[in-house]
Structures are given as structure tokens and as C-alpha cells.
Image (cartoon, rainbow, N blue to C red):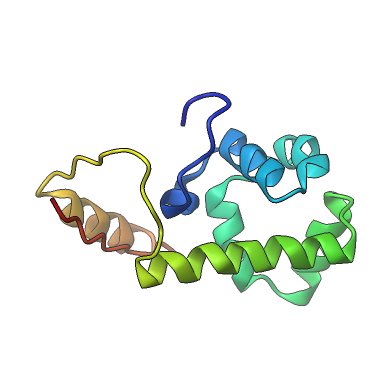
Length: 125
């Protein structure tokens, strides 16, 4: 992502720490940007939040000094993005170029890491 430019919601699971910070600003949780950066919270980490145990969630909230209501807001916004992605409702703001072998790369990555999620993108001309 370019510096200062909003990250693409479609790609939230590959967001960098900087992308997460920009997104936090967008959803009015910018006060947590610095602590998220200090803790290395990226898109992959946000994706894994849904699989956290209660103890892990509480540890995350403490480490990031989050208010409970702000954590709920964070989760709701993540869920909104995930649902929109699954329904194909996300708008992509720039043209994407897809290689024919892209799905093969995703499948290989998933086989190497059982926690990986394979995402299929439907591209229309």
C-alpha cells in the first residue's frame, strides 16, 4: 500500500502494520494506531483474532490498552469487511492484474501452512 493511502479492504488479511494503522484511523480507532504498530499487529494477526481463546483476547486487550467497547467496534468492523469480501461486495479502487498461476500459488502456500486460508477471487474484465 502507498503511504497515507487507505488499504484495500479486499486484501485485509495481507495488510501491513501501516495498513492496519490507516484502517484504524478510518474506523475512528486511530488512538490505538501507535500501540498496534508497537505490537506488530498486521492483517494476518487481525484475521487470527476470530480464532483466539478468551484468555488470548483478554491478553490482547490488555497489551493494546483497549477499552472493551473499542474492541467490540474493532471486531464488528472486521466482520463487516469479511462478510463483504465473501459476498463479493467490496469495490476494488484500482485495476488488478491476475496471473493464471495465482491460484496454484495460494494452494501451495495453504498446503505448507495449515492455518492459511485460500481465497478465490472472481475477476471480471
